[in-house]
Image (cartoon, rainbow, N blue to C red; front, side, top):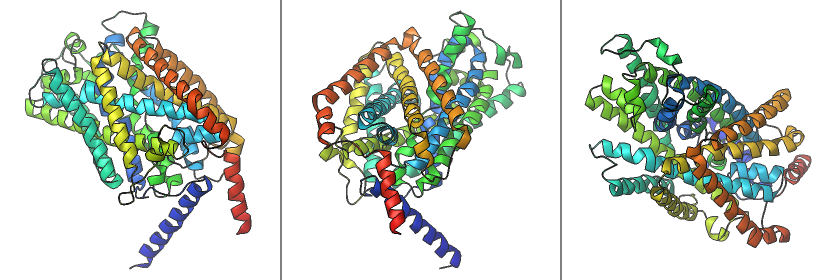
Length: 508
């Protein structure tokens, strides 16, 4: 073995020991296997954002409300979400624990606050996974075999269920296997959007087929609904707002990561920044290549209509295959993140049947019981969406708005204990920029929540969120409040964790 390899292994061992000691000071045992390095953490954040999925799912909505010019809301939303990513990066380096938003909120405010934030995270992930599988991944998979989802709804449901179950099975087998899927997804994301977007731009520029539009289409606001300009512009921001989210789930796998205090902040910030840039490149390519604005606005899958005009059928099918794999990768990341959040809350006795949900398989070192329970819940959510007349409004609306509620709540928690966090050594720090970023994020998230609550299309999701809050309140009042009062549930506040860390330092 070379000296370099010995040094690297020594550093890795010291990093792992330090990471494990953070878990121990928080009151836990290190049960999950630390195998994920930086690229895997970046792949998790990048593939859960999935610009491919977000653009495919929401491009038509933006186009019909503000026309092709709607693509310029993408960098605006991207800038706002990058501010959120900075806060997630600092929280991730100061409190690198599985359960991310629940852990941050509970330790910085209190366990009651953490319960509602954590429950919102579970609802977000289960709803989003179901929406992607039902509304876009299953129909696209069937299209590869020239089968229409509209005429075969039961087959579409069966495919959607498989697209949910298989990612959970991969996570049960091994987090490393799930990570490999996500590592590949980095490249399929780039090919599935950017490469095809650039290809369409080149074909348009070479005039390989006739098209009535020039570059001026990028500023056209011709749309189907003719709402007031300001309102249409705001609604078109739904494309970016519902796409450029989820990056914080990389922090949810902190206890599976090697040196998470370094890898999580870098992974989160890079994933958001790169997604904004690559997504914008793809959107420009797809938009200039629109062959007929009326035809594309009326298409259930507008990007396939654009691609089908310029590309041969076999290449369109290849394009779709990349897109479906990207969506499958979201399922793999989502399944692992859901299980880590449930596991984290269960080890604090915050959930029903916590003693079972917190169990970790000794061989695979994965929370198998949590994974099995959540796959049933996800399929149930899928079935519920399938039965609704407006599944898009319900599932996509809920998936879009909940992350911003969580971002707002964790930013409030961050603001409450900002000075305390300053005393914790970390790799990433906002320093004097912390308060300007906090103010921007609070204003931004409130604005986005208002925008996503406004469209009539999403009013079903507003009711759904109300039902979810009612369920969380019911469990809290009936059981959890007593557990917290007796001290049999909840977490140690960050001050106690710091006191333990300072005591260890003095002993040394």
